[in-house]
Length: 147
Image 1 (tube, rainbow, N blue to C red):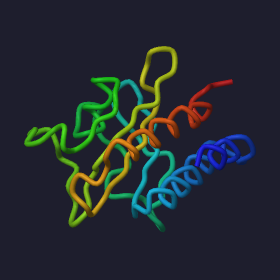
Image 2 (cartoon, rainbow, N blue to C red):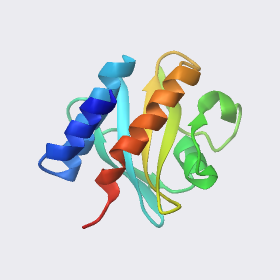
Image 3 (cartoon, rainbow, N blue to C red):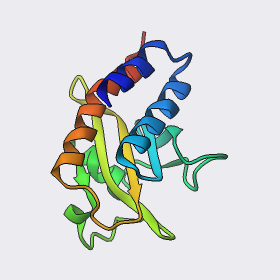
Image 4 (cartoon, rainbow, N blue to C red):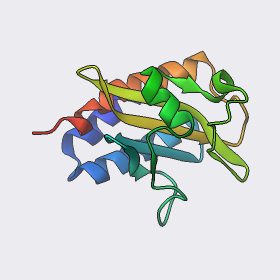
């Protein structure tokens, strides 16, 4: 997966296209049906690429304090749904899928982006998958480097 993601970042035409291709690569690797790549702003989180098919996801932008994504930004570390348990801030359950793991992308000590993977299997991500996503986050960091 790392070599494929490096090539995606290296030659993709634009940031949004690179993020979408990276999300697709992660989805194929993990065999999950939904992966989102997000940018973290001062007040909100916005999707810049996703593997969810046509159209925008249900929530393309949401407050910085919401759900697992907000928890990952605040903690500056990977958050798995099982870690949160019954946290009332966990608002990301839609139908039969939900965010299961969110991996922050840190640059210069700040969370600039997130990889968010939804699964229809509760607690689908053990240590091997978590490790692979954390490596992918490191490979994808050039998407957030401003020139």
